[in-house]
Length: 89
Image 1 (cartoon, rainbow, N blue to C red):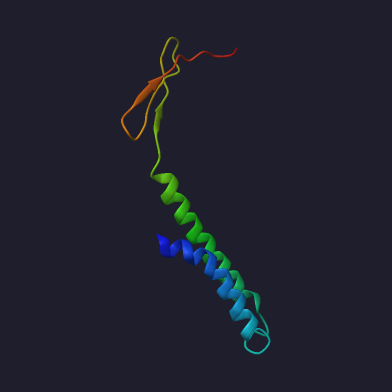
Image 2: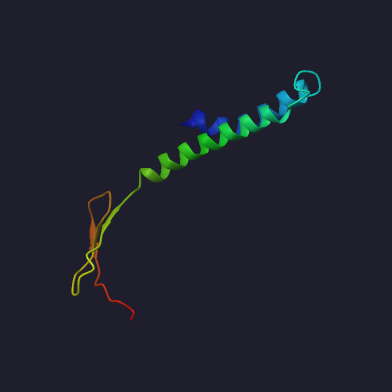
């Protein structure tokens, strides 16, 4: 996980350096390909980290919308809470 976080910052920087060094000679026709690939890979790694961080803290909410019902939710620690459903109209 820590390596992914470091790569998120280093991939665009590496793409910049590669484009800077090889841009006019090697990448004459499409120099943006390296930078685009580096930024895209960084974005994919960012999304993996986001899913990992927020996916670990999910909670389930079950709603029963019939009259007089009491929706309940449970947290990862097992605690539960409930509230009365009161439509505004």
